[in-house]
Length: 522
Image 1 (cartoon, rainbow, N blue to C red):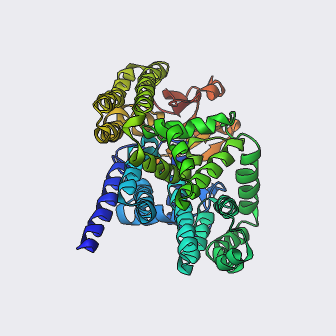
Image 2 (tube, one colour):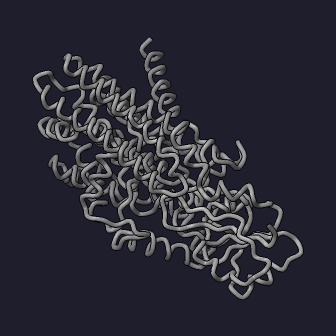
Image 3 (tube, rainbow, N blue to C red):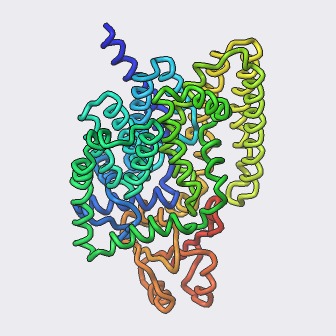
């Protein structure tokens, strides 16, 4: 009977998570630069039947290793090449991440903490957004957490199979995003062993680091060798030096900032329950004799700390730390007591004020974006978060902390569905790609001049070749309709050409770039 009950619980956790993480994944365009390049890269590899060399717009792409491309290719084969397929396995890996975090917390802290941990993760809008995206991060998040959870179980319970799983998952992490999947887990484990005074020869012998390293290499190295050979070393060189060392040592693509930015990303990303993070950290430090709490604390601290000192800062970098932070918050939420009511109420008030600030910030942010300024009313949807905060405050005043926590969770999850089905779709339809694609006959020649939005390649599904300035006029002289994708700033180079007609100019959403579509016919 217990086994049937456990199975039902596991299925419930997985299905609930995947429902949240897959909300409208097929109804939103592949528009952001990262989604566009990753989705198209997988499509081109599938088209060529090539499992080794990643390309975007049929040119070498050195940004990421191939695991997420493989899963996208599987989805393309199953469901066709579309937005749903590109994001399908991101949602699946998100649900798997929630499930293994639930199982890990349940194993050592009990079912109540496990459910609170589950609630923290599925209530986070940023977690939901991350697992909605056709990028490698959802896969890396799973591998990192699966690896570290496996290490903990294996080391604590002296089960070698979990230690081997740790090395396998690390290898898959290296195949997903590179050396970071070895560096950070290794640092976390060394610090943990040192703090529990177990960094000794016996522990190292049990962990079998030489055999384990060979397992990790066996999983990851063959592809790196193959891509090195096929690209004469260019892929490996660019990936290691440009996308790893340089990204850590210098801001890339304008994503910099002081170290506090990373902590802000984490705090905002784990709302609504991050409002209790100070109390939770204090409680966990007090109860750090419980190994899993100390391990979760070190896991989160190393991950967040590493990217705080990294010169390139993005909100998605620290998401692998969300599961251990959710365990910390979940543990606290099962320990809170009415004697701490003032502290709880103060945190909820902060949340209410933050949610109001989010509404106001979004209103003016949308208002200042020319392409969508008439959609500023959509920001009002986020009042749902404020309402959840108000209900949480009322229930806390009535000393019903369970309903207070549920109010924060239910309204936040509801907001997640509203965001993906109601609030964001009207904005998404205003992006330049969605505005211009209906104007382009896909069987006609399309070129680009100087620069263009990469999402066009995914939707046109063909090589968009570049044009030089002295080639524009000849291309436009064609007897059939042709198209040129470019930016508004380069339209001056088309002046004086009698057969150059600007069909549409649309500002890229939330960026300074303005896309332009030129044709030789009106």
